[in-house]
Image (tube, rainbow, N blue to C red):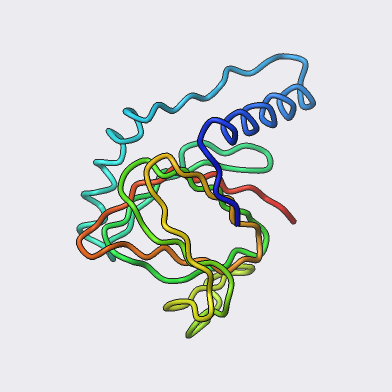
Length: 163
């Protein structure tokens, strides 16, 4: 897991997206642009959904050949998870959390093929996350977002197919 500053990762993501688009077609596609203000406005819909569920809600924004984007909101700490075939890139838009990675998933069970979930992680590394932070979690890495008491977290997610 690596924590980067916003500009360097967004530049790398933009370059990768441009190269991917150029390789697929000679007709350039229009770029997808999400502003911070637009994402925060859109997250208000997720806040309402999270109130009627387990404290979490997300929406898929756009699907591409090897990745897709989402907006996620949490008002409570969720469970630990592992994605065998997808890396996660989180961009923290609002709020804070502690990210735990590695270690072992407690009470592990399969949610779907290649997707494991559990109640927490043990023997994991931890890193505080704040607005503007960007995290890359490689496929196959157990991870768990823990919110501070009474806190919330809004984050943009890029799920990249790795294998």
